[in-house]
Image 1 (spheres, rainbow, N blue to C red):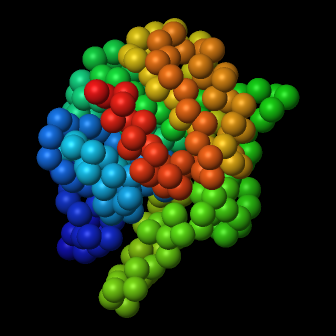
Image 2 (cartoon, rainbow, N blue to C red):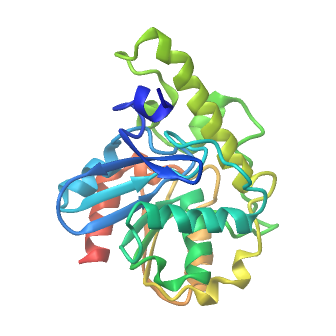
Length: 270
């Protein structure tokens, strides 16, 4: 029994064949298709931002990148180029090519990397606190050089907002608790592969190629990427439609303030 099947309803409820394994997939709602590319917390089931996007009248399709919640462990992903190719394949497998996209954190970074080399991959993009820029005078914090509990505090302002990832569901059978912990470990490992020890892969030199309309969102209380990076992204990207600093939100503002993110996305995709 695959991990995607045995944890159905807790992580990605379904899966699609991908290379020699599978990718986890969450799909909610009806209407025009909108993609969601997760951040460091992966896709711990049909979480609140997906529900809010669906409630706004969208069919939301949220694939998990290799190694993240519900997907097979990555194989042969040694360099950034490997990850960009993998992201491109995942978008195709999930049927999201050309669709509007909400992307967060590491997912937003990968969306930008892919958009720079494959402009048709996405339509308009709403990007929440992307990794990828670096300023020595205002550095990005390392979320991996600390304990799991501190990392949780760095990812969301409200600990309850990340409960679906960090806490074992009350109805989870005892034999699945260990599996849930393994998924947490693999998700954190995959995220670290993308951004540790320094989340700067030269993306700034490629951003002029990102022609998609971009809406930028940043949590005002982001403890990983300072809120000042909202302005840096706005200055670096050629086609920024609007910027939004979200109160009472940490790094994953899509988890802290899902209704606000869905509202911003609905306006961006109207």
